[in-house]
Image (cartoon, rainbow, N blue to C red; front, side, top):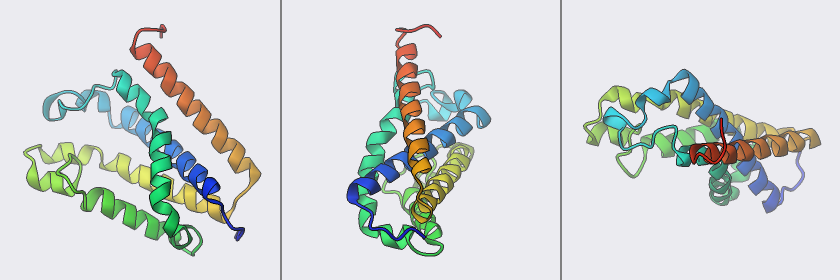
Length: 181
């Protein structure tokens, strides 16, 4: 295990990169395999933006900001989650509990949403595979990066995050009609 003292900047970068990559992979999975085009913006989920929206296209690139914010909250717990045996499981369980079971609002796809909204159960369950995939990828990638830090991982992460931000930008430009697809 790599026991070097991790700086705050390194921690922010790793959280941001793993969050952005895991979010992108889970989002593509949901878009392609869970057929989000059919559900978003219609019926019980009519409040959601359609997948052709420039905001939806901007989402993956904006995850960099969310990753930075996330890192501020996780930093005090880094040794528990990333430097202990099976720390990723603790991280996964806490993330799942706080993001699904213990949400503060009755958001669709949450336990509170099932209890307090009239949205049919199937709509609450649509996003569950995406959430589980994201949480598993994020926690395992982050934990693995801490346990087996290598320069090549940094290079791959920089490349992937750069490509995601660039694709997101291109998606926004295409959604606005500024480039042809």
